[in-house]
Image (cartoon, rainbow, N blue to C red; front, side, top):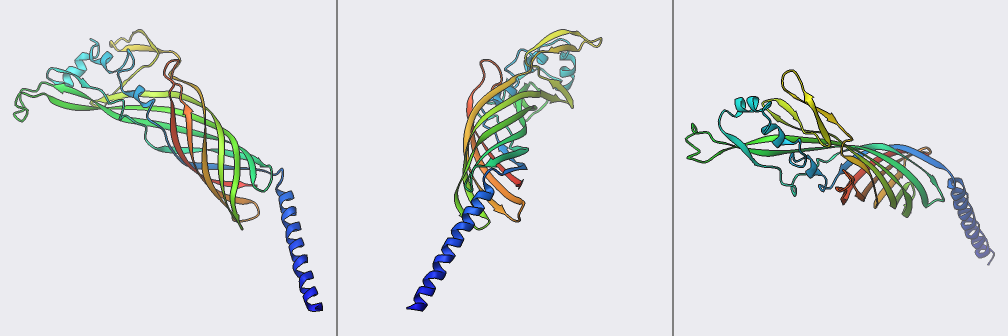
Length: 284
């Protein structure tokens, strides 16, 4: 009987010590701050990519093809009668998947819940083609048909995403934790560049621009007003895992979907779902 009571005492003491240790660990975590750097990949939806197609502004591709100052160099390149045949399909023109870099920080409410904020700096690029039909009578393979030449067209924009939300652990085992996150988003978008290239010559496509005279060689001078872009908002959710590999540093990998409004101008500001993956080293 006394051995049974001794065993019961040991078990009870062990449980109480373990609970006290967990409570102490929880108390140690409460109110602690953390911060880190993140890098990953960002896949934007294609709803705003059509702005780079070359035919959504008065100073797009057609402006150059119909402008007497640029026609001599285009005539020299194409040699025969030519015309624009088609522009990129707005349903298929899309952004490339790109790097996503930024910072991350927050505060632990307790062992399983944290409030955080992070900022993501993204540079998006678009590459597509428009088609020019050329009447080439000297090519016997055409047999009366037009020669179709694809001309590359490019776009570039910057985006900054600011997310503010919560992380909640749903699994914890030793140094490994799994969590979901829920956040709100504010974003800023700016069109940086849009152009096409013919014969290694770069032709800028101007958005929200005014013609401001010509140069001495007949080239048109543009006066750029506020470029397309602006502030949007949205939110998202995701899943992540953390691995604490020493007292100070934790590896964190997180996938999230972000549903946001991307503002290009007052009337063109669609909502859409974007996808992102980030990996972080967190201190704290």
